[in-house]
Image (cartoon, rainbow, N blue to C red):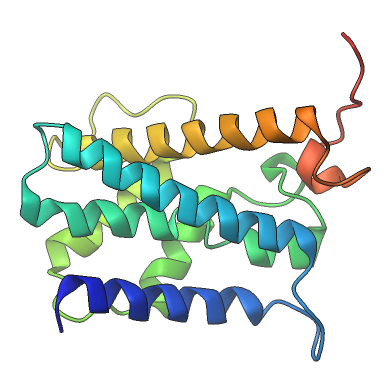
Length: 181
């Protein structure tokens, strides 16, 4: 199967995984739908980053895409169990996302080295600073997924504050009041 077919299959598998956290017979909660939208936006931004970045060879684009696709995979569990996207009130979503990726998703033809690159980049994507000791083979992936994630978050916040996506949804506004200050 060519890469575009693999991507479509993975996206379907990812969507089904996300839907599994909805109450039986119900639509997924709106914050989870927002996380799905965010994930696919991060994937799109990652594609733009790697196409314009000389650090990425064409054969590395798929690995970068996987970093984007799985960077927030634990958010569905986090919202179901804690009704928040705040790590300080639940768990480290980067670490848990890496664990879920390794445990629940097998990618046909993905080398063990690339699987490791994805897991480490996903685990580190939400950290304030990347470790100085990070393997140089992983560093471009970790930087790119962090950048794509932050760009997408900025787009979402900009949209939200122009016209709130959810009125008082603590998981989206992180418990911060929308005041002029």
